[in-house]
Length: 323
Image 1 (cartoon, rainbow, N blue to C red):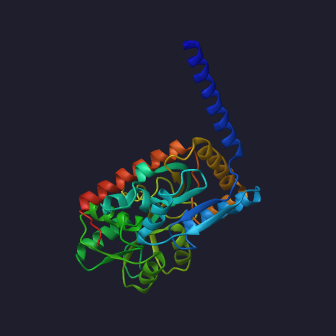
Image 2 (image 1 turned 90 degrees about the horizontal axis):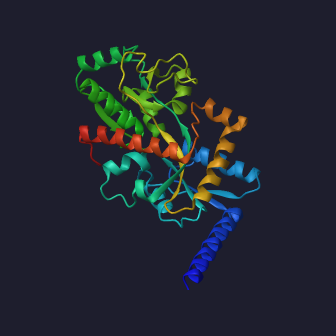
Image 3 (image 1 turned 135 degrees about the vertical axis):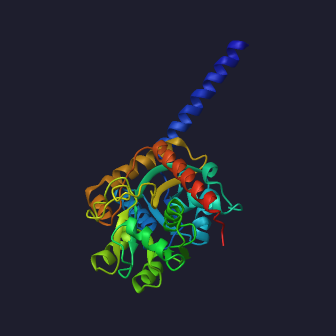
């Protein structure tokens, strides 16, 4: 009788393995939906649509769905609650995965528990920029100018809890600065007000600032990355400028709902690495000031964890709360 049960258990294990193998071989057998929780035209949307196009060129069907609102939380929540079958994935980013959990105790999803990382798609350092009227040519000179004019300057950001907001807060904390934060509904209006002189300082994404820099409408003082940004090679890093400690910037990557089969995660990772390594797409994105890290799901997961820790520390130290 024992031999019978052993044989039965072995047969069940083999059947399960064969079923899993068959499922993996069949995937994907239907369209893949990529949820983007930011508006069309931004980096999350551009990279998601580029990936969908590459999948289409390889004979697979992928569609992009923009579900905006609540700083990205609406789209992230929809993705988190989708069936974990590999057919709904999410173009997540720094705010929804690493920042909002520290700002919103009632967030309807848990980024650490409800998602699995797939691949690190893109990142860009923030660049510290000022209005030309500000008589500072370096971060040190900016700090001195702000301290000489306490409460008179303000820094703009694309939104409350954005990477630009927290980079500004990090800068403010490190140097004990009296400077106000003004948050906007998006990077474009914030940058417009900086160009107009309504705010004097901003940490903005390189991809969105490059045109204004080239036109001389704003001045760049430093980038918040370990190495210089190829898109603006003459701008030093914060460390090179003698101001270490202000680091980071926006990043974007693909996630799947928790419970998604590993076979689907691996297939999506492989397809994404292939797509974003293609010379045409890589050149297009790097020209925008984006770096394309890619790598394994585990490597991306470590990055997300480190970012969650970093911004959590800044938020707690600054006692930053949702307005």
